[in-house]
Amino acid sequence: MSHPTPADGIALTLAEVEDLTSRALSASGVSPANLGPLVASVVAAEADGIHSHGLARLPTYCEHARCGKIDGAATPTLDQPRPGLVRVDAREGFAHPAIELGLPALIAAAKAQGIAALAVTNSYNCGVVGHHVERIAEAGLLALGFVNAPASMAPFGGNTPVFGTNPIAFAVPRADAPPLVLDQSASVVAKSELIVHQQRGQPIPEGWALDKDGNLLSFPGAPGVGMNWIQAPAAGGQVGARVVDGRPPETADELMMDPATVTRGGYVLGDTVEVSTPRSGLKSYTLVGTGTYGAGATAGASYLFFTLDEAQEIVQDGAEGFYAAWVVTEPGADPATVADAVEAGLPEGFIAETGDDLAAEIEEQLDVGLGFVNTFLLVFAGIALLVATLLILNTFSILVAQ
Image 1 (cartoon, rainbow, N blue to C red):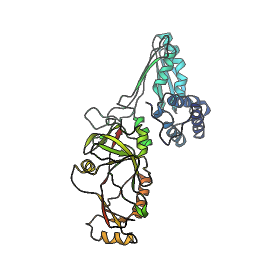
Image 2: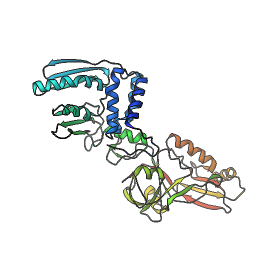
Image 3: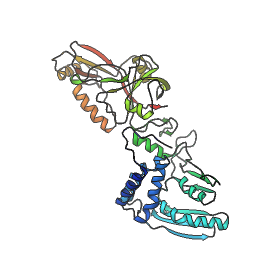
Image 4: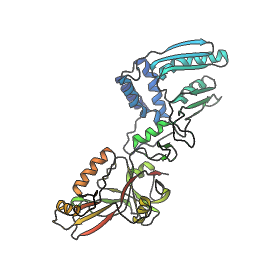
């Protein structure tokens, strides 16, 4: 599966991928004898757009080699207990060198016997299985590849992991073309694809994953943040929510998103965006603008702005009410004094904060995962008249996808 380069990503040539992979693995204790097959696997995955098995795996490979979960210097051994059976012991190392050792013997045995099998034992991850069966097909043989896996997939209608996402790969030689290769996960998608989306803070399509209770997950990374559009000043006269391009939503079927989410999703103004929330399910909106909040840092989350009525419909089933109110003071008023006075009249469990305090708090929370405090009144300074401004704000699982 191919992924677009993230907006803040770095484009590398395949030669640079090869060099980076080789240096990282060498520094992690992988022996020169084992580097070749392993580096070739990462490069081939990137070349084919299977990033989940390319550089995305490299940090884990290095970490496991350094901590001893994998023996990066293991020397695989081969034996052939039957004419049509080749067995390679990876000796607790990577599967790639073991497969590299076993393939020539497998191909020779298959051509001599008409059919043969290669079994690799005591090994670590083998990368893209399709790449291995493709090499067998290039030798003129039909190839099937299977890999065992721990239980991580629930049966249809269940929520307990029973099956593994072990891949099944198939390759057939063709006379005047490269081999035909089919490589698929036993689940709707390879588990590694979820990891890639989580690393990038990107939403996953609905139906890819379930939580422990069997509910569909749509966002394993940073959450989506939905709010009604409101134009109001923030602390010290700074801008709170602001339009970057286009315009704010004016009707219930319109929304505005932050620029990073628009870029990740490949959207342009006028596109239809599907948004999924636990309360409202999947709904379609027209993208009419891009906007952000504060300085624009989102920690990978998606900011979505709706009309007030639509935000209330999404977050609280249409009930009129607000999670937060912004109070703007007259020039010269001390925000801390106003906050103390307001908090004295609030119900138990609610707090009032100055804009400066809230901004610092949110910035810190953005760094650790967008955990927003339960704030009822937020106090900001900078307007000549005392104005009551209402805001609805909530964090919830949200799906943004074309």
